[in-house]
Length: 246
Image (tube, rainbow, N blue to C red; front, side, top):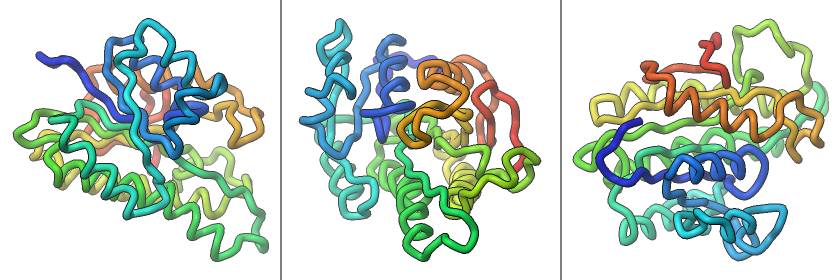
């Protein structure tokens, strides 16, 4: 992504796992990063969160804002607070998510509600709110919205078909659909919406049982988004840039 001004990104779920490494890699690339986290004070001070980045050489380019991604009211307040501080975001990474791995027969209404609220509704509502506020696309300039999904959200893949994650699967499949058609709505506004599977990454979400490190996944995702030169509009890609079946 080439710009004639300092590049600015917002990352949700920035304090842990893939989000933390996305934040670190963007800082290494020279971005100013707004870390959207539930508890900014804890994220700034905790060694297992973002304290090392705050104290590092690029710490002055790391900003924080409070966001409870499970609350529509919090999303609205978050975006309202941004308008006084920022004019434009080049990159929005909707990374925050939750997993619910209950087996068939034990998946509850609450499991479904929780996953859809965080994994589906929140990325859509945040992107929509940022656009309405004039912080992405339009007169402000071109932007990329990268929604972190999962291979489990693909209804066409033959991998992991027996993995017990019904609420999680459905919420990510719905995110894929909303991302595809958000891109249709926003393309004429200068916004590209891309959906990405980061791979099976070792994080707290899966008790660190993944095949990829958060560092490798984050760096790979950003290579696809920022370096590939591909047409990202409305695509569903994995961390290596391969197109995935919807």
